[in-house]
Image 1 (cartoon, helix red, strand yellow):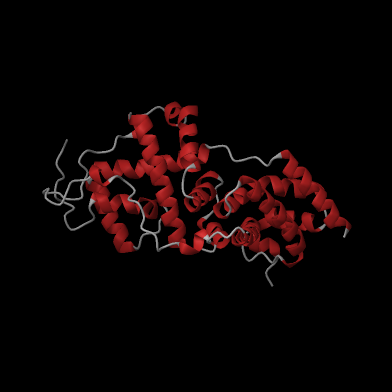
Image 2 (spheres, each protein chain N blue to C red):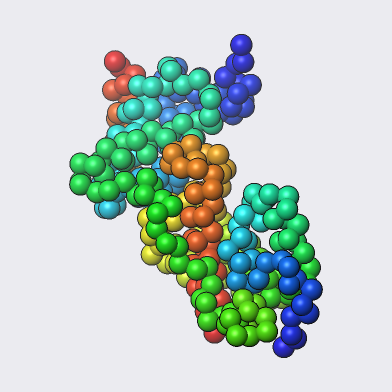
Length: 213
Length: 87
């Protein structure tokens, strides 16, 4: 039989073991480490910050109760995130909200780039750029990663639809794998990528306005 | 600016390529789509640059500081942990 360690790696397995033994420092580590991804998932479902915060707290109670049954079929983080999503769904239903991640695929997506940037159907090269985007690789790193640029990206992410905001935060900000995102949100690999792409495209557009402006 | 060379007529248009950029960077395109995508990038500076911009957007997002757990949330959780332990 595969051990927990062979399934989820020594770091996670060690953490699970310490949590099961009631190690308070391990718990503090876990709540700190998983918080950014947990709050991102919660905010994908519930409207208010305060409720999202409650969802995270309620989740940990569930995690502690379920810890004995955790078998490492997914990473510890993915398992915790799936519980957050579950708790958040319950809250969303109670608030009378529709479940945002279950309506995917039915909505018409905005194009990643404004259609006016491309040549029209009467052009000899329809669908090709009218003028090329500018090359940011020639920009000094300090400019691309300046405080101002980062603030702009943060604002762009904050104003995304909640599903897109959740996925870009999980994938690009907290570094979750596509598998962890699918597992946590109960969506297909294709859906998580569509959401990620739309989110990145919005951030790109904002960066372009700022950097080329 | 330079006219497109026409070499990618059977392939994707730029308008299609921009929608596939994350599929490409995630390595999620099928072999035949990947071939068409790469063919397009070989000839199109605009789309080559666009893909790099999407990578840059992801990189910038990766530099954002993560949300820290509020102290009162942490304190409440530690209390819950002690209660759980005492059960």
